[in-house]
Every structure is written in structure tokens, then in C-alpha cells.
Length: 176
Image: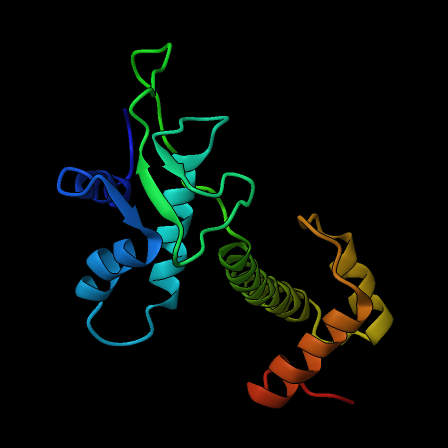
């Protein structure tokens, strides 16, 4: 059985306890390990790992008291599935994705993509402007859109990058 380190820690807790509440697992794993700061991200990660082991479609290593809801309540009772079997010799338990983790990852990913695209547009603008000392706005936009990029930047994005980054901040380009 292939599991993450956190899943293995949860499974090992059941060597000492027959049944555990989700709140008790949090107190044993998260609060003892993460002494300072906000534990909410660690708790969300723990929840996704436990739900991955409770998934009846994949590998139901743990059984939770309320099988109808795909979330864990603090008073939810968890126990090992004594009847668990798997047809394959090797199998993997993967964490389930929770919406709060997905949302934060999506926001961070969008921010990284915006920053990377801004740098690409800046670099392409500088390259075009170095090759052509004087260009009007429409020629600049048509040349940039003629380049083979992975996405199609809008005119507003290009002009915003030109004004904000190259004219105002770095003063690489003069506006006439």
C-alpha cells in the first residue's frame, strides 16, 4: 500500500486506539507538530488525506461514522476497516481534494500565471521596440500579436504593461 507520510501517521495512531474522533486526530498530529501560527492549512491538508483513506471507491482503509457526507466533522468517529481487501498487490491511497485547498491553489496559480505572462509581454515589447526605434501603437500591437505565444494577450493587457511597466516604472520607453 502506497500512502503519504501523513496518511501513514494517521494509520499508526490506530495501533494505540481502536476508534478516534477527527478532533482527537487533529490534537495528536497537527496541534503537537505545528506549535505556533495558524493551523487551518495543516488541518485542511490532514482532512484531505483522511478523506482519501475513507473513499469507498478507491481504498477504504478507514471507516467514518457519517459515510453520506464528504467532509469531516470534529466529532466524527473514525476506525480502521478490518474487512479491507484489495485485488492488486500494490495500490495507492491518494488525498482527496478539498474545495478550500483547491481554491487557494487556484488563486496562487492564477497569480503566478499573470506574473509570468506580464514578464513575457514585457520581454517581447522590449525586443520589438529595440528592433524598431519608433513604432506607433497599432504597429506595436500587430507585431506583438503576430508572435507565436501560448495565449492571446488583449490590447488592453499589452498597453497596460507598456504603460505601467516600461514607461512609468522602468522608463525604458518614451511616450510621444
